[in-house]
Length: 160
View 1 (tube, one colour):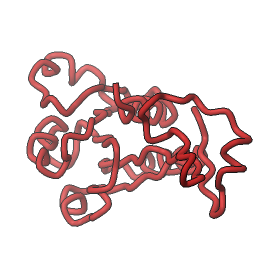
View 2 (spheres, helix red, strand yellow):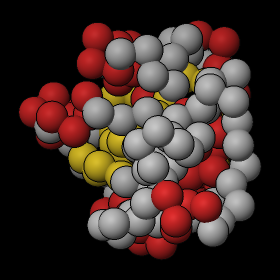
View 3 (tube, helix red, strand yellow):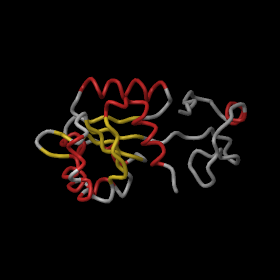
């Protein structure tokens, strides 16, 4: 996974010293006119497992990926950070609802951003996958770990 230099003053010189996987038209491209380093995609995580959230936060921070974490639906609705993200990661089981129901309910707040669905229970999704909202683009089992989940999220945040 690519890491991002988020230090203040990391400008054109720092960006020029690194090699980036340039994707034409993507926000990660160096803004030569402004001399700014590429901006990492912003991730929004909605999960009620505190240990998983801490792991995701640690891996995201290590890779310079900004992440906003909410553990309950009411936090998501009140957290202004959900409006400024590029991809959401949502737990399949949250409170008394399933992830697809949550995405369907929050579709207005999601602003058509892609969603990565995660769960510890992989078997729960197979029979329901065809009924998921269109915003859910990928399912990643939690057993694959935070690194794989963030990589899937970053891949989805890029335009096709």
